[in-house]
Length: 450
Ligand code: ACO
Image (tube, rainbow, N blue to C red; front, side, top):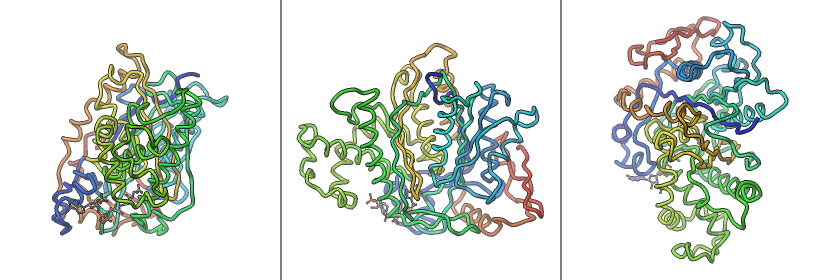
């Protein structure tokens, strides 16, 4: 099959959020650190009524309903998540309750875990499946979902929660370019979850940022080489050859610095090019030292400001308003980018995506939006299905930081408790949301729909 990629997308985020300006005050932090320093305005969070199962059930149900997809249309289903509530049973198996009624259980795929990267592995597997001899002619469904929570301290404001479902098949709206996928994988302890009794990670913030930027460099250099031998034949490949860059977004400021970093890579490859005159002083910088060089960072953020505003800022809407959703984060960027455009302005454009999961696994790849803009085409439907994103974000309920803090404490105290009956308010959930009704004495979870 040709033109394999993302046919439809759906996003779910919690119906409540905490305001980052209010959180700065509540945490006794200088005003501006979370909002200006990290670039975050709002953070979505879940009560004890939601877990990774319910988030994924909700997003899959919404995707199927909004796109008129029948359970029998799906031939593969896999999940990327790092929110582990069971050491053996997969989230995918829980999602099967949406399919098994019609005996549609001939469905490959299972969960993938590596920090924020699992969804990308699920997407690559699904694209490979559609392109392979194992394909049965049906769609693959890729689901990523996480609840990103941190212990009290500097990382807590970079949490978030949500889920994304993507339908993968031929004749896609966003077609994955072949032959350009570029990865960098490495063993490192930058962010990990060794304490299985806690939802919180152990995080070395500074190291995780350095690892992210180093992985970005590696992937971009490899992507450029592959692009030059596939869709972009010529002597050089730079940021100018791409219409948009979407990133895994732990916090928005890191993405602005990432765009600066891409320009730094282009500059190092061609330091004599007059278009880099304002940063030419950095031509001899030691690559290893470049990560901690604040002057370099500032100069390239300034030099790349226009590119950032045009090619990346539109993709940051969800990251800024919901926070880091972990595995769905980079796909939230893609949703935001799509929803900031109309069909005509997206057609035939190319977006490069960078996926990063601590530990670490990272990949850069690209999608080209279909040129078919006729009514009813996959691209037209995809754009229409994401058109209400801003309305949905604005319909959420703002919650006091003290209540957010209480909700975190309650999750901490009752995590893995069995039996357990959640106490979170049901009336504040978006209609149609799946929620945790109860956990029995054998840790079996029951879900209902609001
Ligand atoms: N007004 C404006 N800006 C301010 C203010 C203020 N009052 N105070 C501080 N800032 C700026 C700082 O200058 C800094 O900006 P800069 O780096 O551009 O100079 C920024 O705010 C953050 O301040 P730091 O002191 O660096 O923040 P801190 O170290 O306390 O925490 C961190 C930030 C490390 C990102 C923390 O939130 C964290 O650990 N998050 C989780 C880890 C993470 O997301 N890593 C990314 C990749 S891994 C992953 O995806 C999970």
